[in-house]
Length: 312
Ligand SMILES: NC(=O)c1ccc[n+]([C@@H]2O[C@H](COP(=O)([O-])OP(=O)(O)OC[C@H]3O[C@@H](n4cnc5c(N)ncnc54)[C@H](O)[C@@H]3O)[C@@H](O)[C@H]2O)c1
Image 1 (cartoon, rainbow, N blue to C red):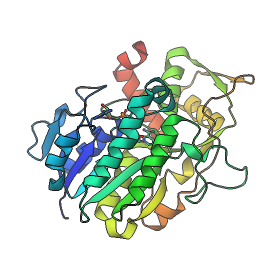
Image 2: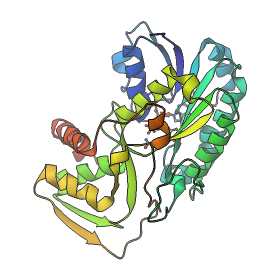
Image 3: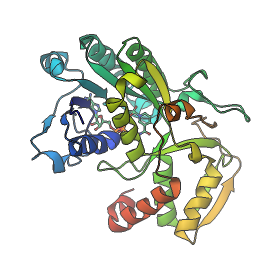
C-alpha cells in the first residue's frame, strides 16, 4: 500500500487525533498543525513516532503554511471553531478560521495535491417526512457555524482534486473527548443523573462513529481518483433514528433510567431529517460501528474516567 505525506490542520481535535493515529498506524507520514485549544495531550502517544511531526501553529499563519505546504500529497483541514454556540460567541474568529483560512490553504495548493474537507450535514435543516436528504438536497444553514462550513465547502470544491464529506452527528470516544456531541452527552447525563429530560423527541438524526469517520477519510485517501470532485454524505445508514429511539437504546444499556418527554421546549438546533448515504456506499465505503456498540464503549470510558462525569 502506498504511503502518503499528509497534513492535518486541527489534528489534535476530536476527529483529528483519531485520524492522525490511524494514518500513522498505516505507515503514512503525518504532520499536524494545531493551537491545542482544548486538549494538550491528545497526540502525546505519537510524539516519539518518526513518521509524526507536530507544529503548534495557527492556521491563520499564512507565511508558515506557505513554507511547508508543498511537502504534502494530501491536506485535511479540520482546524475550526466547531458548533453553533462557539461560533456565535467568537464570530470574527469563526469566519477567519473556518472560512478564510481554508480559502488561503486552497489557494496555496498545486494541481497535483489533494484536499479532503469535512462539512456538517446540519444545513439540511428540516427534511420532509418521507424523503431522505441526499447530496442534491439544498443546504440552508441557520447558524454562522453552518454558513462558514457551507461557504468553505464551495471554495474547496472549485479545486479539482477535492472531496468533501458532509458528516452525520458524530459519536464515540476519542483522545480529545467531546462530551457536547448529542449521543456522547446523553450517555453521560444518563449515567450521572439516572434520568433524562428529552425535548423534540421525535426529531430525526443520522449518526456515525468517530472511527468510521476516520475510516471514510482514509478510504478517500486510498481511492482518491474514484471519489474526487464530489461531495458525499458520511453517516451510518442503519443509524437514521429519532432522538427517542436513541434514548431507548441508551436505557437498554444503562438499565435504570427515567425518561421524560418535554413538550414545551424547542430545540434551537432545528435538525430533523434522515440522510441517504447511498452515494458513498456505492463507491465502496460503508460505516460499520453501530450505535449500540458506541453506547457500550462510552459507558466503559465514563466508568473508567469518572472526571468526564465529575467535571461536566
Ligand atoms: N465532530 C463533528 O460532529 C463534526 C461534524 C461535521 C463536521 N465536522 C468538522 O470536522 C472538523 C473537526 O471537528 P472536531 O469535532 O474534531 O472538532 P475539535 O474542536 O475537536 O477540533 C478542532 C481542532 O482545531 C484546533 N484549532 C482551532 N482553531 C485553530 C487555529 N486557529 N489554528 C490551528 N488549530 C486550531 C483546535 O485546537 C482543535 O484541536 C471541523 O472542521 C468540523 O467543522 C465535525
